[in-house]
Structure formats: C-alpha cells, structure tokens
Amino acid sequence: MIFTMRVSVTTFALGLLLAGVVAPTAALAQADAPPVNPPPARVTDVSSETTLIVVNGNRIQGRDYIKRMQVMPNVGRLVNGQFVELAPGFLMLQQMIDEILLLQIARDRGVYPNDADIDAQMKLKLAAAPGIMEGLLALGLTEADLRREAIIDLCEYRILTQGVTVTDQEVEAYYNGNKTTLYTIPKRFVLRVIAVATDDAQRKVDGELAAGTPFAEVAEKYSIEASRIAGGYLGPVTEESLGTDARPIIVGTAKGGLTSWVRSNNTRVRFFVEDILASEVIPFASVKEAIKRKMLLDRGIVRNNMPRMLREARKAARVDYQGTPFDTMLKQLFEQE
Image 1: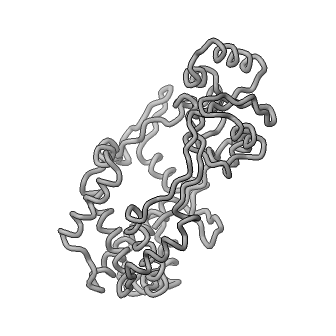
Image 2: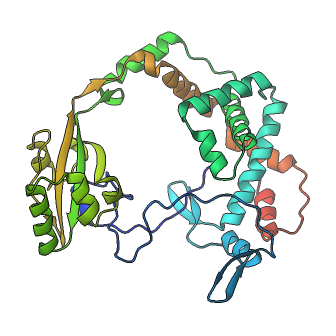
Image 3: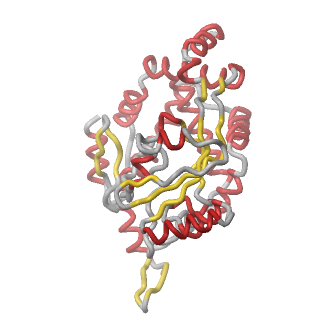
C-alpha cells in the first residue's frame, strides 16, 4: 500500500537541458537554503508532553507536533492517475488496517509464510540492499520491523500469485521478445555538471578549470546545482534523455572532455563527460527470476482481485473505534464497501 506525497520542487534550466533526468535532486540551491540531503531522522517515542525543541523560549511540544503531522497539507495519494489530497494520519491508519486484513486473508487462503520462508525473504532483502539493517537501526527501527515488512511482501505476493503458473519456456520467450527494448542498456554518458548564474562565476570556473583544478572540486566550490555536494556528479545519462540543447554538445564531446557552456534562461551549465558506456545486453540468467515474478504478478492481478478481497475483508471486519481523529473518515471507508 503506497501513498504519494506531493512535494514542491524548485525547477530550473538544467532540468530542461537533461529533460528531467536529474529532477528533482538537481534543483537550484538557494544561498540561504538548508543543507542538501540532511541526515535521516531517527524514530523515537513522542508523548503529548514531550518537549521536542525550544526556539527563543518557545516550546514545540509533542501534542502539537503529532497533531500537525496528522493533518499536514499537500499530502495524498494517486487515485486513477489523479492526486487526491488526504490527511497523512488517515492514510497511515488505512494502510495499517489494510496490512492487518492482508495478513488475515493470507491465513484464510492458506498461503501465510512459515518461519523458513520469512527467513529466506529476509536474506533476499539484506542481499539486495547491503547495509539496510544498519540503516534501519540508525533510524531507530529494528530487525522486527524489517521482518514484518518481509511478511507483508510475501503475503501479498502469494495471494496475488495463488493458482498462477508460468513456464520457463514462457519466461525465455518473453526475454527474447523484449531483449532490445527492456533488456538492452543503451549507450550512456557519465556526466558531471557545473551550473552558475552570473558571468563572473562563469569566468571563475573557466579560470580554475584552465589552471588544472579537478572538475569535481570546481563544482563543489562554484556550482549552484544540488549535485555540487558530490562534485557535480549526475551519473550515467542516456542520449535519449538529454534535452535538445545539451544533446549535440554532449554527444560531440569525447570521453574525458569538457563541453562548452550551455545557456538556458539565466543559468549557464557546463558538463564534464567522465566516461562513455557502450550499449550492452543484460544476460538472461541475471533477469530470469525477475521476469518470472513479473509474469506471475501480471497474471495474478487479473486472476486474484486484491482490491475486492480487501473490500470484502473490510466489510466482514469488526472494528472498535477508540477515538482517533479520523473515526468518521474510517467509518465512511468501511461503510462504503
């Protein structure tokens, strides 16, 4: 169950040059803006009486923090491709309710995972994202939180794919039929960027680059683009993803070369082509299981109607409302089933 937060993002000329490839992380940094990519928050218990911070003698207490978090504006989810604004407190309660019902559906249908299955899923999660456990602990989460997520993922997958089969021959046929479109990585340009807003800054950048200062150091010093904290690094970008202004200039620059300045509105941008990666075909063996999983899910979504199962589960559920701020909204949710 995923909800979408609508975030206001500053856009600028580089987004046009790269056709959105680097948005939203490549937003222009304001001189008085907070640091980019601040350290992640840590989950802690907050009671209504907790004092979180004191600013010029004014206390921000837990009760106000929780209340504001519950009804923070400009948050919602996509419904049939349209953004619908909903209170985050309501969205989270709905998600937690649906997770409880999902686990019950899995038990009722006989597909709830055993401990060995859950352990295997945990190993997959840990292998797919090395360091994830350390990251969760740093956030104040626990192994139990990751384990619950693994159980929910398994239950959802097993409910959706129950009674569905896909043969190895079908998987290989899908791969061969989509090799050029889905399983071929196109040629990519590994780019770094410096973006400036004034003629004076442009002259300083040119001077330091001409003096042999590494591009990354110059980017960190002068660029007003968010990637400056990584030495202007944008990573691999396909030719098709480049905007019409930047494309011919970048494509015509050799590996290890600097482009000329590209102007868009009041921004001047210069790229460093750090590397050029040739097109390559992804081997079948490395994507076989992912393709099979996709095909099982695609067929399962048609065969096993999860939204209908959840509606029926809500209709049959016994809900004892305990006075949440969203009792009325939740009652409407259950009554409309």
